[in-house]
Length: 490
Image (tube, rainbow, N blue to C red):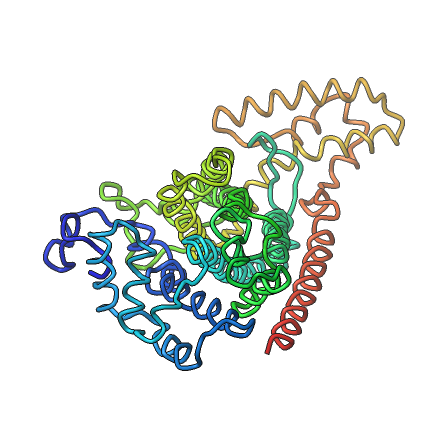
């Protein structure tokens, strides 16, 4: 019950079914992501930032003792009791940062006089939120890498499996199932690159003071070089190489918009994949995994609804909508800052990560357990093959001296007749009609040499294998680069 007020909170267990709980936490997001955006981690980051500030100020010459720093170091993780103290204090002062400064000071009496020295609230709130988002991106990056590996494997295994291609969701030229999945793979790789670019540009707010001018720190040090150094020292102590060069009271809220766009991009890729899986499952060509005891419908016991893919689409639609919110927040920050972003960002930033985490968890489960119904795919190919083959038949007949325009017209007429036969429940008998047609009789050997589905997939298998190899090489380079980076940090 830490951090909750008596007015709007009852102990879990007594009334847990009487009040709204966020389904992103109770149903979708993983534990790691919930911990990153949890209060204990957030306030723990505040304390680490206060410590980094005090350590840096001491190193730059302020009168701060090692005893004070050690006292702070012993209380980096706030206890439940300390949360309760802060919550009680907030009832009186209506200020969350001051309440937690008070609670920290209660367990660090020696350090109490120098906690938050020279800083404004955004020193802890903004820097901690940036760190939380960076940590969230690291989790998302790991999940994206897993998705990329799973789709690469599936695409490779099905690179040669012909299937009917669709444009406008109408039968079109053949492709392969692996080639189709290479398109999803390409989308997720694009997202991975966008995420890496965002991480490379990631910075903290640093120590900028109340309106970004660092005036309070100039008062403390009276030395611009020390003030500039303080900014960078804090970032380095928190594990970051840089800070925003200039800020108002807050870091630019447009950065939140950039983060939300990257997450929305992942949602777009996931949504496209899941919609296509739902279409394929409707045609019984491929299905998401279905548990042995899973129930598809309360009324229709035979149903195998694509529940996971539907959930991916639902969560993705939510994440896709969030950048518009971030754009409004960024564009309505008055002058050096206004507080109407605070309550909004508490919802949007965390929930964008929680929802994306839930999405990728579902995508992994779906890809890892896809059931391919090859006989259904083959049957649909067989039904469309006579239509698809007509262009090649026409060209071969022309090679033997036929009139292209006359042959095209006969194929058109016979195709319409065969299509009508299919619509009336019959088979696609186009080849048989062509064999009986007087215009085509003279080309009998062309018609008796029946084509196969693999004659119409072009370079789909080669394209798939080449692209998967390209992706694997890229991911291996990124993995090696990440390993080198971590080694340097150690």
